[in-house]
Image (cartoon, rainbow, N blue to C red; front, side):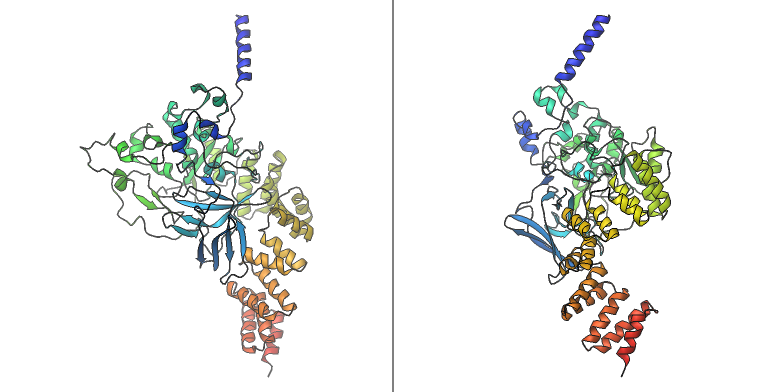
Length: 594
């Protein structure tokens, strides 16, 4: 008996050495054996979900965005593609190259810029298939948007591309998302079949995941890993389980062991761009199937097109219904609530088509949800209450860094900075690499302590904050080498040096910031360029009518040009805003002298 056990142990060890854990490979290695499937799959939206821009995918175009009073353009130059933002008339332009396209173009294409440090930023305008043209990217159609500064994280890459080769642990919670120079181009075979290295070495059914051999719940979860989003609002809509990094999910895993999903309380009528599985799961067809219905009941993931109506008729015979295009009435196309320029199929299968105009134009909503958050999926698991409390910004008994940081962030929103600081410190004791927690901690500390914390973080954001605290031009320049879209760093350098170049860069990146434009006007005035300075002062007041310093400078400039009536109006406006402003009182007396 002992001999048999020993032999089994030796054989298992040999198998382990012969077949190590599978790893991800270049999916082109799948093509020789699966040529037909490889060819048809390459035409699907998933296969084309991430790419380099081309003349056909990045056409030229212009968006005049009235809400922010900015003009955005898509440009092509010498085989490269750019987006530019400027004020009307082309003043203070800020341009960034589009290095990647995210989205197949079936519904939309959004463009991304790679920064020198490996961060990736989303660009402000998107090409939409339904309108065959350009409009603001989702979330940007507002007077105050992020311009070229919205960073994408590993969660974005998880759903829009194959897994990138990132160093172990750098995709964990709270770590700055830095991407390797070489990225996959589109979702490949392994997102549904698992890592392919063992299968290439030994092509047997046992060395690869075949979703058809999984139970229906695991099959559905392979699709749900990307297509289950309860909402795009920051509830949070989902959170990864403790100990799970972004790229740790494998097909066949229980999705609830990787991610926990949350939802609004009492609001399930949402129709959002990534809500196909969310809508399907509330359909009568799905509920009546008792778990047998999955996405592949209707969709062949290897094909770009298919006849969905034939699938419907498998349960709903011609005698029951003679309709040949079932989806047109029972799964109508609708305009999504969150990406308002996108029209998609509604996967909540309904008996009657809604009577309202489902394609009517709509405006983006930007109200923040402040109500309670409910658990959505999985419906029950041992530590459900812990995750539910975390999602609702409540204190928990957990000492896990993620739980501590989530509660600290909630305390920061409520204004409890000392309480937040204590939790950030505890999280950093457990994981010193949580750069975002360290930057947030620095915001709660006195200057000397904040400087000490910021010096431990080598990111553009931290360097900018450090340079502003220490008034160090060298530190700010280093920050701009990593990310030259930091308006605050340009503004500070422009004032320190002084520098027209940096002040203009700050204004171009974020025209809403009044101080950089005001300082730009003052510097131009000192240089004797009075007409240019006057234009800047007028722009400051136009965008920020309650900014007293801007009105004061405009009044002085008007007075110097001999427009005493205009100067008096500005000085009186300053005193209406700030009745004790001594400079305005003194200048008003001078302007009113006969």
